[in-house]
Image 1 (cartoon, one colour):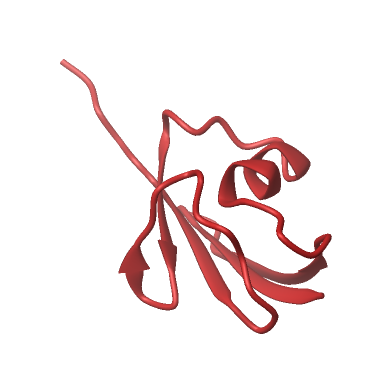
Image 2 (cartoon, one colour):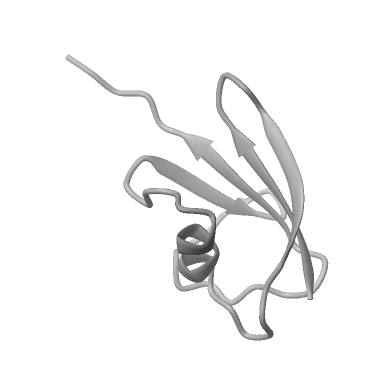
Length: 69
């Protein structure tokens, strides 16, 4: 199945990736080597939990979180 992924940070990147059927958002994060603690995830414009199951044609965004002291 094909999923469009956007990684939103200072250098915005977009790419289509393949995932197995019934893959979770967490699986996709691991596949892309993203640290789940430093990104907020959205699927089709809505905030999503890491265990959300992905569907064909979903648009996934990983939004980098900036924090500091």
